[in-house]
Length: 482
Image 1 (cartoon, rainbow, N blue to C red):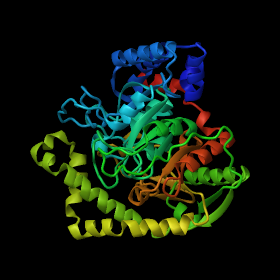
Image 2: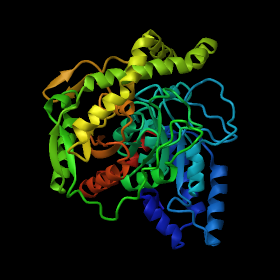
Image 3: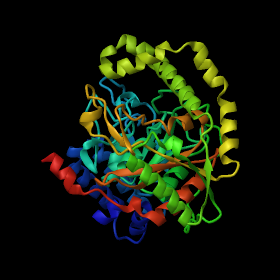
Image 4: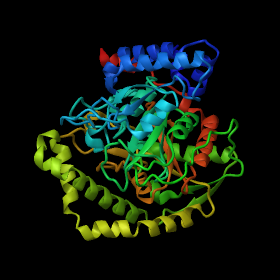
């Protein structure tokens, strides 16, 4: 069963189709693994074993009756604890009281309809507002590759659960890198979808102009399957109006005929030496696989980062303003302090950032994607940091950036937040490992509705490199628990 739990959705689906394993047996094995190993990782905030087994039994009855809902039928998944599940209270990673939801979030309802089995609620940063997973309720999720390190934020529990083989997929959220950053640091795959293609109904809002729900999995193929199940218009989310950009990955995805834009030296000066090596190796793997590489600049990149930061900070402050005043104890001191920064932005700056958004998107797409199918970027500036380096009170982290050492913390959103502002899709995929065996990742970004191309390129890259198939040494988690 370990081989199935560590494998992909297609292999598990085939095993169920031929009767080698039932949905209940697969779900029971996943729950047993969580019980045995999650004490060291804290990937889950709440395991919902009883309802999961009931759902698995229903999937088995449906299969015996000849009704198979699709490739996710009977597949164990989980959700970041900021999506509503009817009858459950989503903590959003906070200490504040939460009421039970009356309705299930749109993306979870679509996963249910596709036959997936939801195992429970996953750890996350407090109010999705910490890049390394700070959670005042239960502590941060820990990285399965080294439990002394962060799993990333804010969807850290999702990434950790996938890397540990607890689930085959998860729903995360991303307002500036919260899916892609932990995916890179845990060696899994995560998608920021094209804005307006995936409903956020029933998902906690932080920054309505930037928030996105997105799928996470261990491979591009699996991520595409989950995306196909959850994407599509929803009248309950007024921004979710675009036709679905979902498509299955071809059986033999090819890079020949694809053009990939890559960065020059200047933008890469802000990442660690090992992240730079992984980026260069990824570019070479794409070239060796048949893709043409073209050099590109990142037009107005500093301005895009600044505009995204203004929108995010302003909207988060506005979203939480009343609760911050009424229930300050629901927020940790660090999150209160970080949210307060949003109140200092003049309204004119915020409105200007929204006003120029469409023009900035058009200019970026024309400059980068006029001659490229995708853009290759880093997904995180370095390997996952040690938790004692990034939790409240920690000294500024030093890290190697090639030939020199930076004394200031790396900006984890440097290569991610702009795509939320631009509304463009970006797929994080594993890109190798550091000398210490820690995952590193890259992103493939594209023009609007280019998810099928990004998944195909990502799958072809994975077939060449095999990075996604490597699994963490479970003895690391066992040692942390001991």
